[in-house]
Length: 102
Image 1 (cartoon, rainbow, N blue to C red):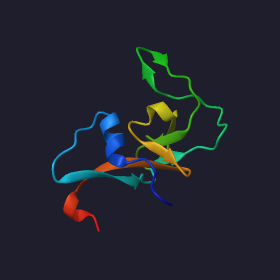
Image 2: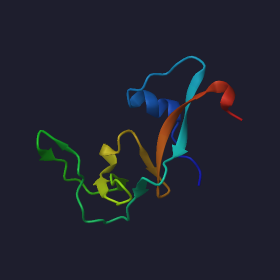
Image 3: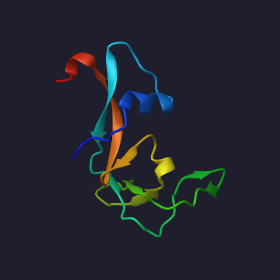
Image 4: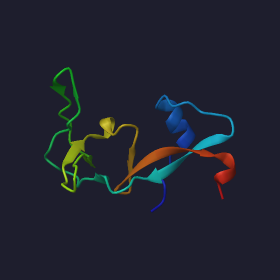
């Protein structure tokens, strides 16, 4: 799978993240505690503010389970905590030192 075609540094600035001299952002596929959901999933986003739920269609899930018991919470594309969906995978940004890039 290839990384999303969106410039990671531009996405980071739009998301309100700071940039630092000698560092840049790179896309990384999220580990197994995030997964995308099939199109048409009937569930609603779990994001809540002031007891009002978002209610948009679920696009990805976060495993909030503990002690080996899975508990998947669904979120819409707007509430993925800075993550992005691309090619059926959930991607996040990581700040990397410039000299670490091959």
